Image (cartoon, rainbow over all chains, first blue to last red; front, top):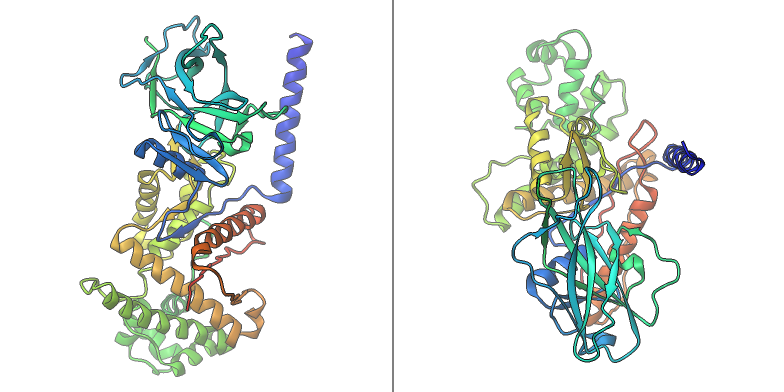
Length: 205
Length: 264
């Protein structure tokens, strides 16, 4: 065992002990609510824009469906995520249990103020959201800027992986310390979010 | 041993438990005659235990004496049940829903749903399905309705509120929306029961008054700002609930915070 692995394992044990201790002190209970109407939430907003194909605001952030023209501070701009009616096929799998990723391209248009992009994926509208690699094709001089993100797929199941990809647009640079995984997209401190239609990724066996 | 039920008790439950839990295997007939001194007909006592009739106040006082308890808390349960019965009857009229047999058990589904959601960690962590079902079962007071556990679990799964995999379950979403007529009636009855209990505790049971918080906040507000006000109220209530939520245990209460805002 290398010292790095030992350090990681020690860290994980310490983290789980800390979590158990916090649960025993503060409780890890649950809460909920019931009512006659839906509660506005980020998940509901994402669900709405995917189904309606438009943009909608929630909690100070704008959420748009792929191809919808943005409102708010990025008014007139748009992000178009490559349409995939058929499941994406993730065939770059090297070894069993290795993470499998497939590129998903999108284009951006009309961003006339300095902005930066990050991307995240989730299996449902409810999160959690995980940052993924994003590659910008800098060779495009005119026209829409082409970008691609690496969409991960589960390799431990034969069922297709359900995914929603989110392209996050920040005014200027993104926050310096950004978490790798967050419960909600809003936790990335994003200004504008474009979400893909619901995608399926399959890993051939 | 399954955990003791903490579902709200009706007056019928109190009559039934008193007869059965004395440990002397009283039949309804013997209990009516020997313990209650013939103050109630055995057939009527059977109806009371099934929730088909209400006892009168004198009989409730008599039962309190048998239990060696002050009568006020038991009378409060009777008053609440009567209020709910009247509320349920008028609600069915308002909803044009007269096909449903009258009763005060309409809230059961809503109570079980709330217990089932609160049994799952807010952080989305997985727990064993068996543990979860045991928690739902706590809300099923009538053990002849054990199938309710499966019904509630299936309902939450169907609504995508929970995710089940490999014998474990986790929270996906925390808000249950009543959509069918049955669900809406059950929820209305639950809300009415919560409000009635809080008022009765506050007004007629000094020893329980501090456990409930009843307050009306009022203001003039621009009509256009109502959605924003409600959204922030919702956010604040949710934040507090998540901050204070603890594992169910001997030292915890299942707190219901009913938030109502309406222009009058």
